[in-house]
Every structure is written in structure tokens, then in C-alpha cells.
Image 1 (tube, rainbow, N blue to C red):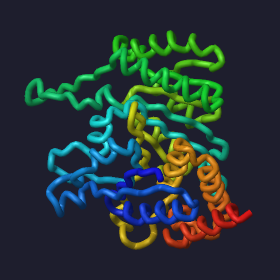
Image 2 (image 1 turned 90 degrees about the vertical axis):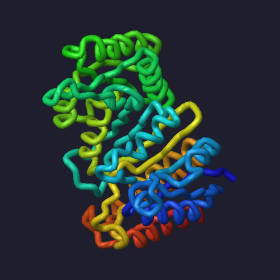
Image 3 (image 1 turned 180 degrees about the horizontal axis):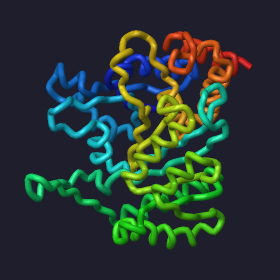
Image 4 (image 1 turned 120 degrees about the horizontal axis):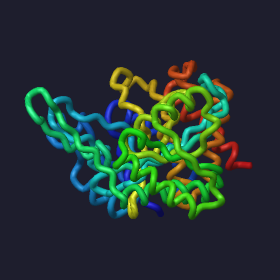
Length: 337
């Protein structure tokens, strides 16, 4: 039996986590979900952001699936996401973004992968006040982290039979930091003659993505740019409700739904669990359950395309429970064949 940590999180997290457990059961996956609390709601009750033993259990299992977590306002805490990334050195954030038939969006044939460096850049949070009118932030780009994430992107492209890797930068202005990131990308690409490679300035990339996303395949970027284009690309496929993600380290992988906790609909059985179920599909595929991942993804695609039991955020009338039950029905039909 495989063990994995499940972090429901805040708001709708509890509802979509229930969907994960029901779908896992329907797929007959031998996974023991070890559930831990974390987030703003847990803080309000216990005066700490995460349950004791959470970090140790993630380290032991090497796997976690995470729902949305909020950070208490005005408390001075780092977000759960940042703490987990830094604690486990999950240096790569991988977000595949693909169009689903039945989801209204500007494009119907998007198939992109964003590879985001996860440990440095401006997100190190090194800031200070020069004087009462001047705030200063430090942007850190290192050779080690740049080589690691760029090589990861090319390896991912090769393993998954992707055709091109595009380096995202602002080296025309940030000549030392982004300049080094671009130089390293230009050096490493020669080691992968089977993969096409190019580079695009971040602002031009945003424009090009909106005009024609089909010209891109795998995008590799420093932390800040990766954060921005991840959400931009999610918008191209219908929003964050269809954007699974995984944070990858040497020994730990933390899969997650990247959308918010939606406190306005929490507890009303209206949540759309698609993103966390797609993240579950990624976890299954990466850990020897390729067939089950394929069955799950097929069920999601067919249910959304048909649209009979979809949630209100995508034009349906189904509850979270009803949508989950419809997916389970499709899974059982497939497994009974």
C-alpha cells in the first residue's frame, strides 16, 4: 500500500478532498491517505498554521496532495505553500495546461507546460526600507538553481515527447540576473539536440501567448515570471479550476490545486473538484498507477464535454457530490469493461 499525505486546507478544501478520497476508492487504488490540517482556519482554532507531524509525514512518504490554504491576514506568517517549498526544497513547479472540450475559453487547442523555478528570484522575500520613502527588494538568481530548473525542463520535454523548450527572461534589462539565466539556457540546450529551443522576453511572451498559444510548448522561467505566466496560461484554458500543479524536489513531490479556498461557497457543496482531481491524476501517473490516471482523466474529459453533471462555475447545476458521483459512474463503467 502506498502512503500519501492529504491536506484538505481551507474553505472548499474539505469538500474537494472528499472527492479525492471517493475517486481513489472507485479507482481501486491502494493508497492510504494520511490527512493533516493546515491553513488559516486551523490557525484560528489552534494558533499555528499546520498540524504537528505534517512535515515529518511528508518527508516519510515523499508524497502529498494539497487543497487550497489561506494565510491569516496581518499576522506576518509566510504562506503554507512557501513554507513547504522552502522546507523540502521543491525547486521545480510543474503546471500542465490543456484545453478541455466543454470549457468555454478563447482557444480550444492549448497544450502548454509551465516549468517554474521555485526557490529564489524576488520570492526569497529579502526586502528592507532604505529610508521612509524607499523600499528595496533583492533579486537572486544563482547558477546552481538555474541549471537545475533548465535541465529539468529539457529532461521533462524529452521524457514526455514534447518538441520545444522556451526560455523566459528579461535579459535586455536585467543583464546580470536574467542574463545569466538566459546564458545557462543557451549552454544547456546544446546537450539536447532532439529538442527545439528558443527564448522570449517576458512581456513579449505574454502578448504572444494571448495572440497564439500554439506557438509554445514547454516554458521554463525564473520564479516571478513563472508565477505570472502560470496564471495567464490557466486563463487560456478556462481558469484556475482546471490547473493542476506539482512542486518537485529531490525526495518530495507536493501535488496541488492552485486555485483559492473560495470561502464564499465553502460548505455549500458547490465546489468544482476538477483541479485537485487532475492533480491526483498526475500523482497516480508518477507513482505507478498509469492506467488509473488514464481512466480518471478520461472520465473528467468525457463528463465536462457532455456537461450533464458539471458544477455551476462552468455552467452546470450539479453539486460537488453529484459531479463526483458522475465521475465514479464513468470510472466503474470503464473498469468493468
